[in-house]
Every structure is written in structure tokens, then in C-alpha cells.
Image (cartoon, rainbow, N blue to C red; front, side):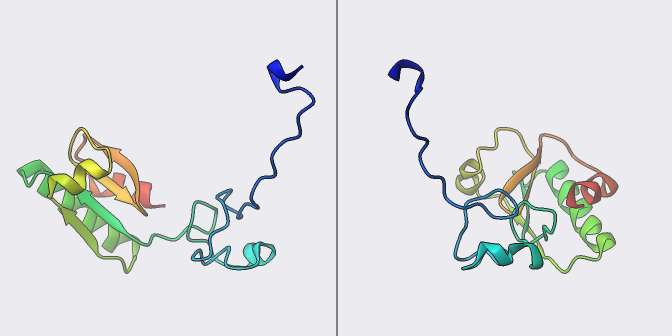
Length: 127
């Protein structure tokens, strides 16, 4: 019966945050007591997600710079108080696994790559 894992007990899983991520000490919504998570705003992937960091990854070309300007405009229109970071260092770009540029990274997750989005499109991604 071991072939299909029948009869084996499932390993205990770590408690999950409201956003279904493992509980982390540094997470503002999980903290030390996951039971309180629903009353706090979440910095992970849950409904209470807040934008903490925005990065535009590019090679420094005209289209990448245009995407950077569109992203800054979208952040301004959305009323966010987050500074948009423009990264052209190829080692850092490759660290995100980006193969086509420009790319948009929100809260350390790649949300767009290979297209120059207009400000309205970026704003939709931020919401």
C-alpha cells in the first residue's frame, strides 16, 4: 500500500496566514498569532494586500524608460505613497528570472514582462 501513499499519515503543515502563505514572524498580518490575522491588514497575498515595493526592470532603453514613467504616473494616480525603483543592473534583473524586458515587480513578485504597459494598465495591476 505504500506505492500510492495509502495508510500514511499526512505531515503536519505549518499554520497558514490569511493569505495562505506560511506564517512568518516578520509578516504584519501573521505576526506571532495567526488567529489575529483577520483583523490586521495583510502585507502578503491576501485580500488586505498593500503595495510595499514597486520595481521596473529594464535595460535602460527608450521603451523601458517609457514604462518606468508610465508606472510612476500610475502610482501617482492610484494615490500610493510608494517610490518606484528603476533597476538596470543585469545581475539583479536576472535574479528575478526575467527573460524579456521591461518588467514590473510588485512586492517582489513579477506581474508583467515583455510589454510596455500604459499607466492605466499598470494601475489595474496595482489594484
